[in-house]
Length: 207
Image 1 (cartoon, rainbow, N blue to C red):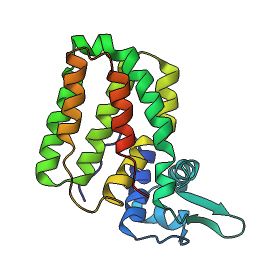
Image 2 (cartoon, one colour; image 1 turned 60 degrees about the vertical axis):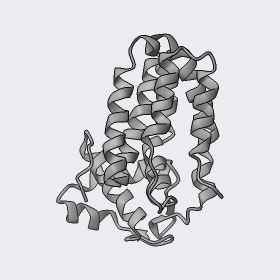
Image 3 (cartoon, one colour; image 1 turned 180 degrees about the vertical axis):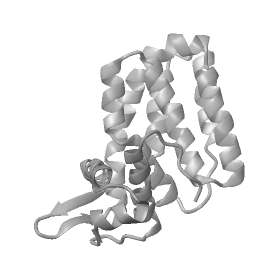
Image 4 (cartoon, rainbow, N blue to C red; image 1 turned 45 degrees about the vertical axis):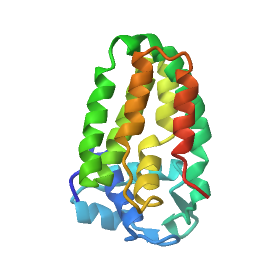
């Protein structure tokens, strides 16, 4: 697997555990042993504990009294729950960011270019990473720290990775959908908020 692009040890460990859940290394109901992960990655147990705590807050794993941490039995319905909330937040973000992004969409265009490369390569990890980065740029451009913090707290990257890699086994192109959003910002489409909301909802896993 290509090493994930991350910025802290905790994030690297989180991605390692997430990869294990997605790939089936840890099955639903199976225990994840903090001590073993620390030994495997040659790190202390503290960042492993922090990564597990983050994944538990996202409901990917659960703590069971006297049994430790285990993988939740996730369904498409579990993954779908965050999408209406995310769609509402991104609708607001798009409306707030519309003026700034109409003037400069270069940050979005960089992510679309990266998505085109990922689509051609069939690289689902890169697709997830650049899809999230594209949407994060829109939320950041809104200039509202509360909105950005709330959006980040949904664990967008984790759920997007699971949706693309776990519940979408057939390769799918993502660049063109995002290029259309860029064009809408550039032409100052008054319905940009609704457009982005529909886009996010369309990405939700099918139950």
